[in-house]
Image (cartoon, rainbow, N blue to C red; front, side, top):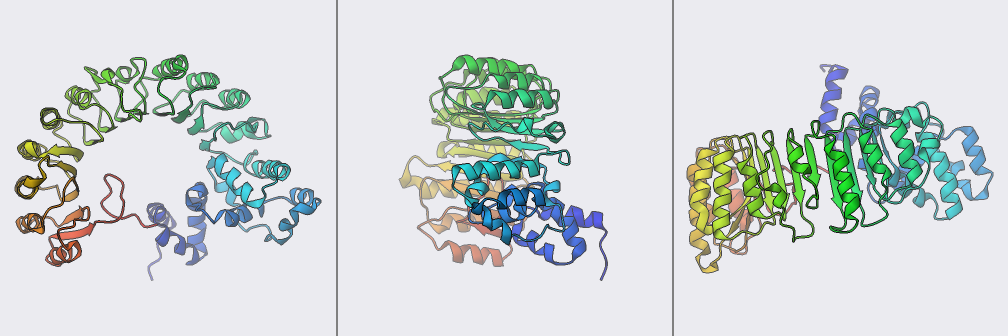
Length: 474
C-alpha cells in the first residue's frame, strides 16, 4: 500500500478534525498516525469535551502530575482517587495544548470534587501543570468574575507572551488584567462580554497595549447601563481602527467607532434589545466590506450601509429585520445595484417583490448559495406565490447557484416543488434544505428527484449553520 508522507497526513487530519466520527478512529490505525493526530487533537482538547466525559479528560490531565504533586495530594485521605490513575502517559499531551480554557478546567475540577477546600488545592496543581516555563499558549479563555492570579504562577510570562486570542468578561479581577497587560502585546482577536456594572476599566489599558489587534467582538448584556464605560471602551478600540478587519457588536455604539474602521472586511451586528435606530449606519462608508451579518437591525440603516460599500460584499446574512413591502423592495434593489460579487445571500422576500428577486438573480451572477425567507401576506394566494417564486428560481438562477435553503410562513402543495425540480433538469444537482411541509410527502418527493439526479443532497430536519449545506459529522 502506498505510504503517505507525514506532511500530507497532517494536512488530511487537519481537515478531518471537526469530523469526530472520522477523526477519532484514525488514532488507532498505527503509531505514525497517532503521533500526527495527537498534537492536532490536544491543541484545543476543550472543543471535544462533551457533557459526561469530564472524568475521562480529568484522568488524562491528572496522570501528568509529578510524583511530588501526587504525594502531596495523596497525603490527604480525600485524594485516594489518585492511587488508581494510570502511570505517566507516553505523550506529554498538555505540552501540545495551545488553548487554555479556564472555565473548562473549573468544570472538570468540579467533577473530581465538590468540596471547596479540595477544589482550590486540586485547581492549584492542575494550573501549575498548564502554566509553567514549558508551555506557550495562543488562546486564553477567562470566565466571569475569575480572580485566580494566573499571572503570578512561575512561567506565566513565557506562557502568555505570544497570546493571540483572548476571551474574557469585563467583570474580572483587576490584578489579573494588570498582569496580562504587562505580559501580552500580541493579541489579535479579542472577545469581550460586557456587564451592566462593575466593569473593570483595566481592560482599557490592556486593549491600548496591543499592537496587532484586528478582530474585535463585543457582547453587551445591557444596553444603557454604565454608558461612560461603554464610551471609553469604544474610544480605546478606535485607536486600532487602521488594523481592525473584523468587528462584531450587539448594541448600537455611542461613538463613531463604525465609521472609523475604514479597512473593515467583516461586520456582524446583533441588536438583542430590539429598539435601537442604528442611525450610526446611515451614510458611513466601509469600502472594503466583504461580509455583512445583521440580526434585528432596521432595514433602512442596512440599506444605507450597503449603498456605501464599494462592490466587495460577497456575503449578506440578514434576519429578524422588520420590513414593509416598500422597504423590502428598496433593500433588494440596494443589493443588486451594489453587490455584483455576491456569493451568499440570506434575505427576506415579500411576495410583492418576487420580480425584484429575479433582477437580483440576473445581476448577481456569482451567487452560489441562497437562503430565502419567503413571506406571503395573503395565505389564500400562497400556492400562486410559491409557483411564481419557483419558476423564477429555475429560470433565472445564475449557473453557480445550486445551494438553496428555504423558510416559508405558510404551507403549500407539492405542485410548486415539482414545478421547481422539473424546470431544474439539465442543471447542476442542487443541495437543498427545506422546512417540513404538511401538504406533501417530502421524503418520497425528494427521493424521486434525487434518483433523477436533480437533487444531490437534501435535509428537512437537521439544523445547519446559515451557509452550511452539508451536515457536519459529530
